[in-house]
Length: 248
Image (cartoon, rainbow, N blue to C red):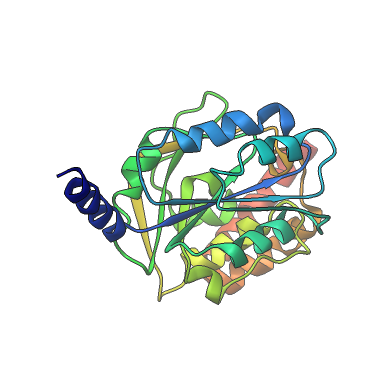
């Protein structure tokens, strides 16, 4: 009877999509265990956990070794920045969907609820995150995506998205911004908003603190190419007004 119940449970689990959660780390010892624990506490059964470390020297490796029985794959070696490490994680991902979590971020219980609703293998799903005490963002417009972007920890990507697009390593802290503009606007990929707050986002990470000058220089051109003339004109006029206000 117990065996039958176990087999039934495995059958149910196998029908659910697998989510590959990728964590990129570098000297993350103060926060990493809390981050890992937030994944272990999820009720969703099909999570593949991948950690890509950039050759840390602060005790991160010891934490990864202590958790190796719960981590599907991890490595530690020098890399060419955040997105190079993320690309390494993508290559190891076998899940139907891919999700990126910072080593100083935490998943919350609604991540599992959102994962239960991943049914379209061609859909990018996004929800919201808690950040700096601000109200969760909710559904966003194309203009908001182009101007402000969406915090990556609110997005669960279908693996197929990474077969079509890749991170531009020239953008050291905003390659996900450029990636999202292309992927969200792809007519062959659906975009689905689900009303869940799925993570606590720490704004102290690299992308939250560093302005990507190369991306900012290219941003208007990317918007024109991706969204067309009308949205580009709106963006350029808004930037011009902001520049004039800052000068006054």
